[in-house]
Length: 273
Image (cartoon, rainbow, N blue to C red):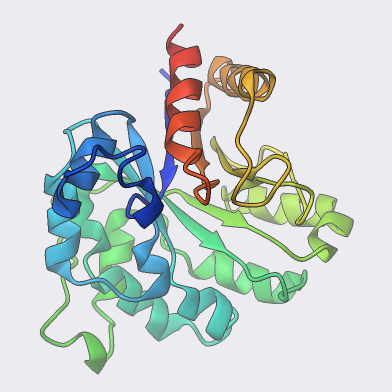
């Protein structure tokens, strides 16, 4: 049965303390507090730097058994290397401990920079390098370079498919939408539906066996909230995909004015009702 995962993009924000998080709550307890109120979140520290196995284990053990993390792929791969010569960076990423999340590992999110335009050859080469299962990811991780010596972890206790989603930001993807979505569908990779107050392309096409949406702000990027009518529309969008048998992952990234956690809980409540 298809399920919806509704959550937030990250959880460690100073402005949330005393608003979403109760005053006096320890920073170490913020993940558990958030995870008790939603069933998923995007783990975005992995975007900025390679994390250590102990961190992945701590996050895994700090949430309920039925919780799922979406994991943001490293910006070194997407923004620095710009998808070129990424065999070693991909191996290092998967060797850093991502697979230690076990059953709590959900989709892997690859966010492309606004300056990276549609290049079918480059994109197909990248999609073709992405591991399709956890066992395949572990074999890739075993090829990590010396930077991960002594600090790698990529044991897989139970093999399972891996899901990937790509978020694009260059306008050329909108102009090449048919070719781009066909390419994603060929690799069963989801096209992220990005709500960005009109800043970046919004591509709402089904290209995989699941759907993925990032809600960055309806009228003001990273800041504006979602009113009742907007949340009703997103609830209807989610129900439609669930009815068609597709899991749905939705993450609120409108964190600047402490709207994300409250919008996520409001959307989840609509779906429960």
